[in-house]
Image (cartoon, rainbow, N blue to C red; front, side):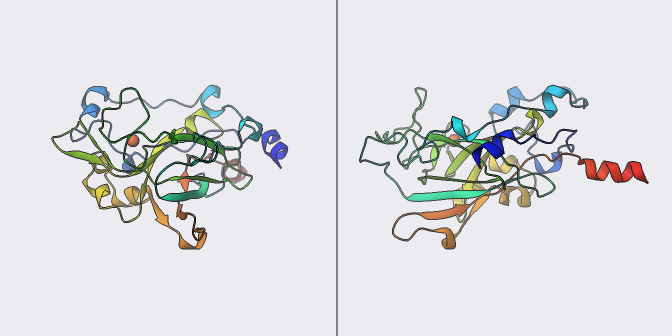
Length: 250
Ligand SMILES: [Fe+2]
């Protein structure tokens, strides 16, 4: 199965334009660092070049056995990370609802106390010696993925006088072209901190926020082990040759 995925020729062709209405504006003063880093001039839209509509192809052979298991991938033998054990699973889809096979997902997160393993981290919560906080996986033929981890804690950050991030997992996704690259965050169903967060509040559309919230899925839970959260991720889709051919044929 692995070889079939890595040998598959990815689709090529132009992508749909991004729907900017469901993305946060680049300039959002409640999220302080956006003020300096946002462009001052209107954006220009250019056609995608070959280096944007194509991208690297990842085979499953680059993965280590524990790469998608954050409970164990940094832990000493026989030990495991501290925190509520969870499974996160879902599909990577394109805008036509088609699964994206062979997509590389990288994820990183704070530990159960809300602390990152990073030299610039300033939060007083302790490090967990058995938790590194990052991992990766590749989607299967249907675009499905899963990972095991511990539920991260919320943490404070220097934005306003008392701003906190809700519990979240960061995701970076490589699809089949650099124009599909997506970096996003996943939140947890029922977390009241989501609606307090200045970063979340830069997203103009409530439905777009809800697409970032993973649903608790008791059906996929492993009894006496881990609860499960379902999180589907939508990348930019190709303007498919099917639609274009139909137009040309008319
Ligand atoms: Fe974070």
